[in-house]
Structure formats: structure tokens, C-alpha cells
Image 1 (cartoon, rainbow, N blue to C red):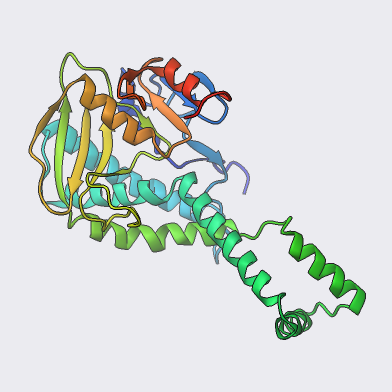
Image 2: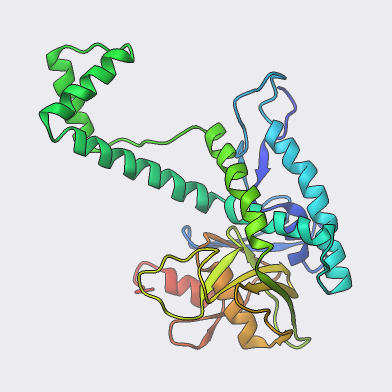
Length: 315
């Protein structure tokens, strides 16, 4: 359809506005891209999006952007809930809290990192299955029958070429965008209920401390007790889940207990920033510089992060 929006935000602009000095969608943000090793200025409207990220196969109404439009409606509710919590500076067990849990759940699963993880899992799993089938005569016969039933009757020579091509694994297996969008809904809705069972607290940045930043994967999990072999997830015991709500307020939770209120000093801000940026590609900062914790335990800035990510770094 002509005139349809093409810039689909995986990090909502209403949320990113809270990380600008002005608090508006036209406020200034500073982007640090950890793959490109580059920084540049932007605004909440010009960062945190991909072209056609939520585009799906058209339904009965022929609208390819039905999910994007529905998401915009949901974001309106999330924005009001977030504003109410930030304004009141506390959490209430009411509709605003429920919408907040929805917001955190969607932010956890709608980002490119999660889509890539799912795609990589599909790719690796499918290739492993094909390797297993092609390793035996029974498996080869099954694959050939599957091709025949799919309308792809191959000669002996063409089938051998197909088998050789598959064994090279120089191909990518993935599902289309419609499937990935459906996965967002399948994962986020039950996750919001699971998150509501955690114990939540707001932490506030001290007046003399630097700002929190956000990222393209702002929902982070930090293990408080080392448990080798235990996967990190929303049900994992002794984990700190943190989400910066804006540049001066963080939302945190544990399963076992409600953390006490806390005023974040420079070190605490650096620790939370490190968590927010740990699994991200892009960092969205209110200022060109920020603080984070380096491997040495010292506090670093934006230049230190770029240096640590450089080609000659062991980071």
C-alpha cells in the first residue's frame, strides 16, 4: 500500500525520548555501534528501527502492516503507563503495572538480537537434521521421497548434486517475517505474566551521578551467583533483571525477594550500563560520553569501549 510507514521501531521512540536531555522524540541521542565501531548523533525517531521489520503477509484486509499498526496502539498504552510510573516515582498494582509488564516482555523479545538468535537456532537445527539424514541410505531415501512429494522429482545426477550442495552447508535456513512476527506474540504474551510474578523495584540515579543509557537490547539479565551450566533465563534463580526506564530511573527485579530502594552513584550507573549494553549492538546515550565497567573493574567511557572492541583488543 502506498504511503505506509516503512521505518519499524524495535525500540519505541516514546521510550527512547526518555534518554534525551529534552525528553522529546526530537531530542538528541548519541549512537555507538559496536559492530561498526562508529558513533553518530540521532533522535528517537531516527534510531532503533529497521525497514519493514514488522511487515507480514497480508491478511483478509490486505494490510501488510497490521501488526505494526496494532503495536502502535499497544505502545500508546505502554507510553501512558510509563509516564505515570516515572511521574509518581513508584509502582502500583494497577493497570499501569500490567502495561509495564507487557512493555518489558515485548522489549525482551521484539529486538533484532532475539530474532537473530531464533534464526540461528532454526538454521543450525535444520542443518544438523539434514546431516543426520544424509548420513545413511535410509535417510537419503527419505529425503528423495520428500522431494518427490514436494513436486521436486530429481534425476540421480541432480539428486547427487543436491546432496553435495546440502553437505557444504553454504546456505541459510530461516522462516519468513510473518513467522517471526508471530513468534513475538507467542513469546511476549505469556512472558508478561511470568514477569509480573517477579519482585520489582525502582532505582533512581543520584543528582551528581551520570546518566543511564539504553540499547537495542535493553532488557538484561545478570547472574548474582555463578551457576556454571545453568542457562540464563527469566526463571533462573538469583538473577537481576534490569531495564533502564529513562536516563535517571531503572526498573529492577529478582524472583526471590524485592530489592530495597537504592540511589545509584557513578559506579552503580556504570554497572547497570554495562548490563544494558552487554548483549547489544547499538547503545543509545543522552550524551556523547557515558560510563561503564571495564574488565579491569575500572570505569570506562565511550572511547574506552570503542578501544576494547577494536580489532587488536582481547575484549
